[in-house]
Length: 249
Ligand SMILES: NC(=O)c1ccc[n+]([C@@H]2O[C@H](COP(=O)([O-])OP(=O)(O)OC[C@H]3O[C@@H](n4cnc5c(N)ncnc54)[C@H](O)[C@@H]3O)[C@@H](O)[C@H]2O)c1
Image (cartoon, rainbow, N blue to C red):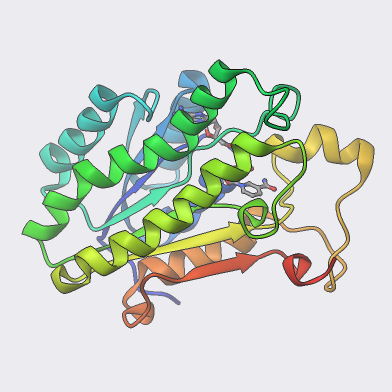
């Protein structure tokens, strides 16, 4: 089993889908969790569930594109646990009804998607890194998307936000490697979560060489590995987890 016991982990967008499953996997391995989400009811429900299962967890409700919320998350982690070891920048939105090609994309929709998906990664990383530098390093795992590797028609704000995450991941890995801070990005393919379910139940999941849909644990297991010392020579990596979809047209 991957060794993660006692590590302090922050997961954004943890109330649903990939983030929720990831929180469960870390809790099962006795990590100390800070879980965040903008959905107050769902994040508090997850917190209660985890506490009942014996986990060490605090929940913080708020929008991670807001710097005051992000500062609050880091302060709570330090006040509660004294350090920050792992940051999983997972919160994100996919708005197929509002996103579009550049000609038809409203400026405020572009701003909102870029803010929630990309600025949040900048902010969380900005305010976590000083604490990781003070400690013995850390691991940051950013959730990008297969859409950033392939492009995706009529989804220009989403693809740009997720592409930005990949570039930022590489710069951060180069900048902070000497402090023992590793930064990697994961590019999920079609994963069965509330984010994708409604649309993909109608259209079917895109085909991939492995012939099955992805599940949140497919991403969560890689997050665990990248968070642990088992991956301590890996930084600046960009990992598709998509059943091979990104190499098949
Ligand atoms: N599901 C997929 O097929 C897929 C594919 C590629 C990438 N992703 C990425 O994986 C991540 C998780 O997606 P998911 O499928 O689990 O989605 P989801 O909708 O099930 O969960 C995302 C969570 O993020 C929260 N959130 C949204 N905006 C927030 C904000 N501003 N601040 C804090 N929390 C916020 C939501 O309330 C929700 O609980 C996202 O970044 C998404 O873009 C998902």
